[in-house]
Image 1 (cartoon, rainbow, N blue to C red):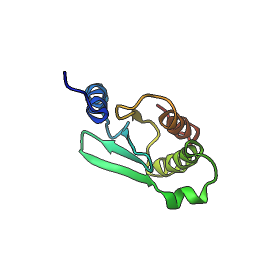
Image 2 (tube, helix red, strand yellow):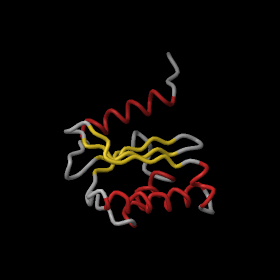
Image 3 (tube, rainbow, N blue to C red):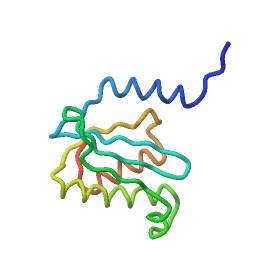
Image 4 (cartoon, rainbow, N blue to C red):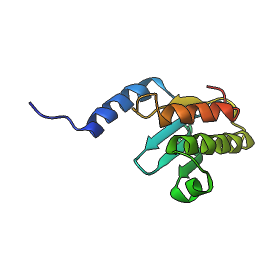
Amino acid sequence: MKVKIKRENRMRRHNRVRAAVKGTSDRPRVSIFKSNRHVFIQFIDDTARKTILSSKITPAKKSKIKGTKTEKVVEIAKILAKKAEEAGVKKVVFDRGGYKYHGRIKALADGLRAGGLKF
């Protein structure tokens, strides 16, 4: 019996989520990729196959914000939500990227909501 790698399992979950979640110009998809050091967030219009807005939470941005990784993600999400509203995005579809909805992923979603976006 083969041992499954975490990444393969996450990609399988991600494909299941992506089968149901589609972004449009009215409600773009918020796609998330998380590594140990960084969190990448994209607002994607799947019908036009365009990225509306993207942001990478890097150590440089994190250094300006104090707190744990989770607290930093919340603050960056609020900033990104304001940028999205300036770009004309008010409602989004959340794509958790195959990750469990807890920890930094949940904090990011809460930060986007606190910033004014509707899921």
